[in-house]
Image 1 (tube, rainbow, N blue to C red):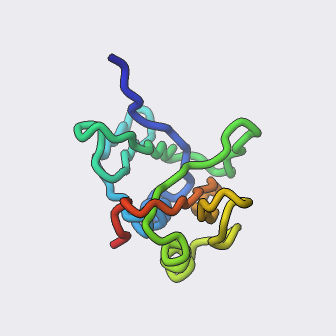
Image 2 (spheres, rainbow, N blue to C red; image 1 turned 45 degrees about the vertical axis):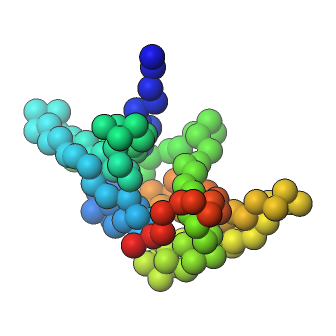
Length: 135
């Protein structure tokens, strides 16, 4: 049986990126320093692969001096939260950028919002009553 493990994104400022995703309740799961390749890998998430949950892999290239381009294929990460409006406020108070305030998605009854991480990656917040509360 196959299992989805992680999505990798490149980040410019590892500490800043980690700080943003901590606002959403994620934690650093493991880190791998590769001096000969001059990069660091940091895996973040809620439970990690050992609990059957997918992770986000940050790749931090030590010598990268220019911003990365995102292309047109990647859309966003999606995170379920019990209260989208409260999660938006946590992100806002933490200095994050809110690009769509909490509200219904059309007439579906689903409440969503969009925020951006420090590297400009979009994160969709979706209201799910059974999602764990943010710390």
